[in-house]
Image (cartoon, rainbow, N blue to C red; front, side):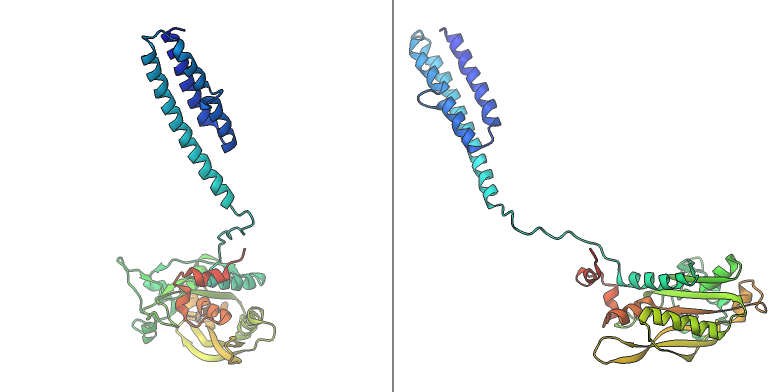
Length: 338
Ligand code: PHE
């Protein structure tokens, strides 16, 4: 064999070895491969080593150096591959297939949204649809059309943020009453859920931004008994079959007479049944019906406004309204269903 032929063999071995070492995927196969390449008795390297003394004496030095370099490279590659396979085998052993999987995250509907959905569903069954209005509202819709005389003290309870351009953040959902009457011909039965804003402290029972649900029914010949019957029916549906309701006098510029409705419920706090106020209500003031462009001699109606946040507190026994706005997953996860 000439030197060139020998060197070709050496380089062939180098390339083949590199390919096979990379491809080997178990420690067992690795051992077999190692014996084939560098095994003392029948390894390919030993074969070449045996040829070395048969080469012309002048070429042996060069040939030997080339073979040795390839041998070192192959041994290093083999060792790297072995370490990698050993590590993979160790991890595979520590994989405990009986370990329970992690629960997937599951979404939850916010308790206030749950309550809104439930209320809307109850009213939908008796013919109410949904109406919406803007949160940045005009002074006229928020106050004027609702029969608040200019600078009336009732507006103190409704202090809010005024925006550039003269609009304000609505303080209640009642402006949607007027917008709906302007937009649709009676008979009207709508529910208007939405967010409202007031200059309130953020404490256990108040939030400066909160949800309301407005209800409005306008038709011919509507009276206070329609209001009482419908709202009492709602209370029985929402709080349970035998729930009692009572109506007490109240004041709103946009209803006459005005009332508050209380329901008798057990809040689950160990104090038994007691009366809680859940909404303001009343017969829509004729001035509001006229402001919306309808004939108040012909059309009459009733309206209510309630806070689903407060209702969520009563339903889920929450001690602090701020829980509803904290976005604390530990609290919200309790409402998750999956
Ligand atoms: N808008 C009133 C409030 O925010 C609630 C209400 C609505 C009262 C409709 C009567 C009729 O307090």
